[in-house]
Length: 441
Image (cartoon, rainbow, N blue to C red; front, side, top):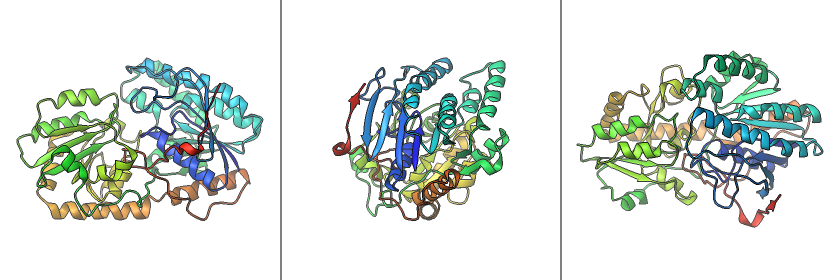
């Protein structure tokens, strides 16, 4: 089967949607499909185009048997609602010539990864011209997020954006998302239930697993063995609500047995560092190398997953999968009825979003109860092993594609293990330099 994957983010990005898009492409390629990708140069979560790539030039790569065409895009140094829309629009426009080049290839399926929905007209046009089936996979409801998080505020713009979104969603042959609540949201926006699919993000529990010894990061960071370590690792952006973690660290600074470790990068990192100035119990790490992912996650005695209340079902935090696979206790901030609440309620601790007091109480309680931490960690590990398998998601995707297009035979065996490269708790295939070729256009 010929499959074109069209999305803003891709490897070698270390967190966010790009890691999953790369894994999806590589797993499909390893199952004998012919896979091509149209994407942007890597820039997330630093919001800076990576060294060796250009913001202004087209480029073609080959990674692990997947042909990749990269289109230019503008990356703002500082974000605002208008700048973010311009950023997304720049890729939607610059990628159109690359889509046109794929017409002669005649893909059987075109899979658009959202964000960004601004690319939907191009994806739908390519599918109609070539006779391909059009699939939309939603990692993030960007329109809802833009207004609910205050990035865009105009009432008239909101009405127009939601109307356009509904029209576009109904044009796809399949609309999938990463949580049951996000799938239900698509139905609420007018998508027929029969056209939806649940494709959860995954984690390879052979690569992320509990260590039987103390993590090397304890010694590196000078954290005493008797300390309970509270870890946040992943993107630091507007939707994470990580300012709550700074407030919790300040409230617990008088304790001499709790340490906070914050690892990652993003637009909100500088503010988090500033909020934690003068706190003795906080340590910061930049995004860490792939080889250290499991070691990093195992520094935690408690993983914390903050989330703003107004972002509850706009995104499903991808970092949760690695937290659970590491076999450590998890505290998540979520409202009842949301996907995050449902995922964690029986295997972790739930506190209300943005409630610093409740978070402090939960951390203090778990810090003093090693038996409960161990029980929660074991429950999370079992959940990761049984519910978050890469093969499960791949089988669902491949079977639906085969039925949709009438091409190929659904996958029945697991693809080879994909090595980790992310900090956010999930896997992404590293660039195999021996298989990379570059053509600058």
